[in-house]
Length: 124
Image (tube, rainbow, N blue to C red; front, side):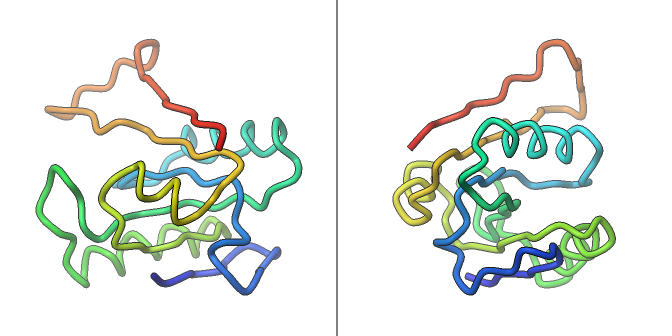
């Protein structure tokens, strides 16, 4: 588990993060940023961050180079990201003990239809 605290709220622990948007963020885009912003307004008692798992349940593990490239996106955006080794959503919920976990499903075949994008929100 590694925290890259590019935001100005810098708590010492990943467990202090209470609003977490989990995804691959390849690439990070405005939709991701807006989603976390809206969730943060809904649950103002938590510190928001993004989470990427280096080990994915459905894909090959990320290489060090891939992780570094993705982390650079968050540095540029000034947003905190956690790199974890938790491939399963239920394990993330248990580990982080978050107020709100958001999971953006992987889109197959590069097709994005904005009106049908599904977001799973679990209030823990």
